[in-house]
Amino acid sequence: MAMDEYLWMVILGFIIAFILAFSVGANDVANSFGTAVGSGVVTLRQACILASIFETTGSVLLGAKVGETIRKGIIDVNLYNETVETLMAGEVSAMVVLYELFNNCF
Image (cartoon, rainbow, N blue to C red; front, side):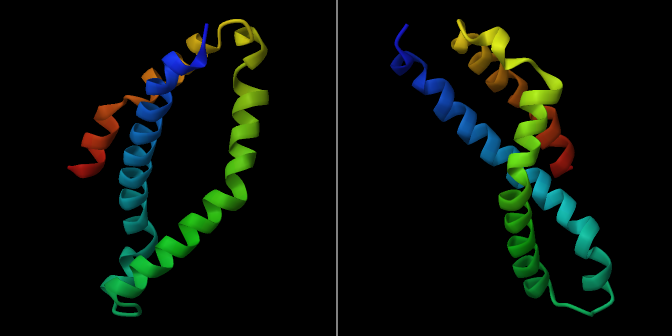
């Protein structure tokens, strides 16, 4: 099967991953900088700038290790060599966890 017909899954997966990463990052940054901002050590603007720098740096430097762990330690991707579309559909459906977005917002 041509991969062009599954391009929508890649695009949808990217959009969902971006939204979830943004919401989880926004939720977790409060744990890291809440005390520093509350005590007045850093301003809210400084905390946002620092969080942007360090969270981006962490994802760039350690993201490959996380992907490697998932690829080698959690699932056997070789099972899906013949049916790549099944793996893609599974990954997209696993990302559609709207309750996680809801929990992070409220």
